[in-house]
Length: 139
Ligand SMILES: [Zn+2]
Image 1 (cartoon, rainbow, N blue to C red):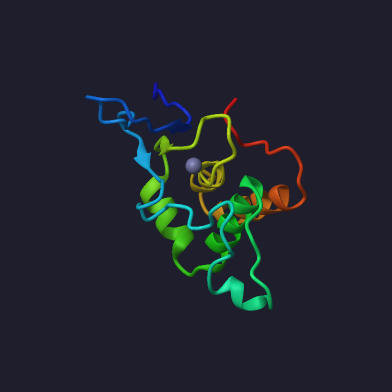
Image 2 (cartoon, rainbow, N blue to C red):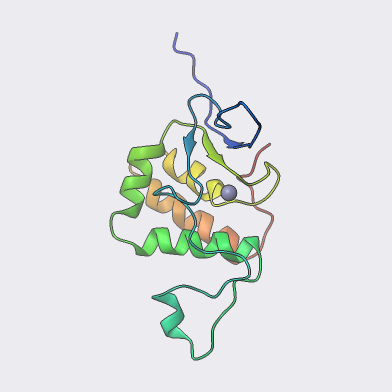
């Protein structure tokens, strides 16, 4: 019988003398290929900023994560790379485990059943955009 565990999001920590990375987890924070370039309090980056006459500030975590998900959908090859790199792994970010994080997009999407990552991404975007309580966070 095969024994599996569901991948989850874990917090990377800074403690003296420790690597700060849970064993087996993949780091998805800033500086990694899968980091979220949409930052709370900063203007929307290019090319999305070009759609607006005035700078649009990213107001909160929900907006930062929603834009991350939209960018994942809009960027050719990004979803493929995310699935290839991250499927089946715990995802480590600096975010506290109860805070909404782009890892909460990557977890359900990269672990969606075969060939359904795009549909899962659409569902995640809909949930984020309509402002309902996000169902994919840690239990
Ligand atoms: Zn995070």
